[in-house]
Amino acid sequence: MISFDQAADQIARLDATDNYHWKTEQAIEELTTCLMRNSTDEAEARRAISSWLSAQRECPTPADLIAALAEVREAAPAAQHSPTCKKCLGTGFQLVHQLATPTIGGATLVQDLGSGNDGWKAADAFRDQWDIEHKAWIANHPKPEKGQYYKPERRQYVAEAARRCDCGAGTKGKR
Ligand SMILES: [Zn+2]
Image (tube, rainbow, N blue to C red; front, side, top):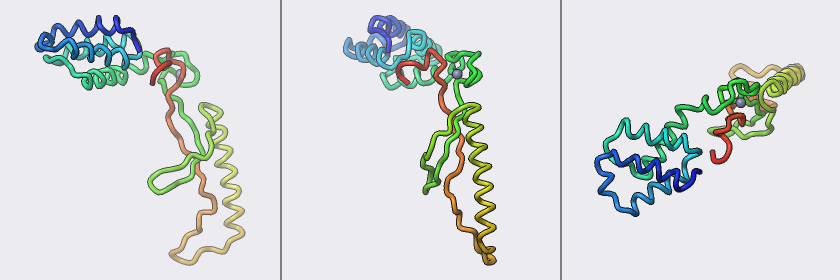
């Protein structure tokens, strides 16, 4: 969120578009409020308006503004993260390991194993333990008939997911 005045300064730059002058006062206020509410900071609002002006002739709608903000946010995620961050190495994303149970068309989270080294360690320990238990289980069960399979005796597995890192100043607040 930025201030109304900061948003108004950026919206005023749309004066350079063809149909800005045909907009009613109410429409301009609507655009200003939209930019105010949806911008993470003033720099992001400025980038979104600059990007719009460099590519479009007409004045944006509130929906256009939201899309333009999303675009600049996607385009510069690395810049908002610390390049020295040990958790994400400046990429803005951490690899997270999770225990999950498969469901139809997806998976249900069972337990968060953590991110970074802790996550890797916990995931390896789970896989090792799973191997031991799996071998023990197979040893105690007769071979399946031809064309049949062992019923999976354990339904949990390790899943990897990307999570946005919290090291970036730009990630604080709304996101
Ligand atoms: Zn980070």
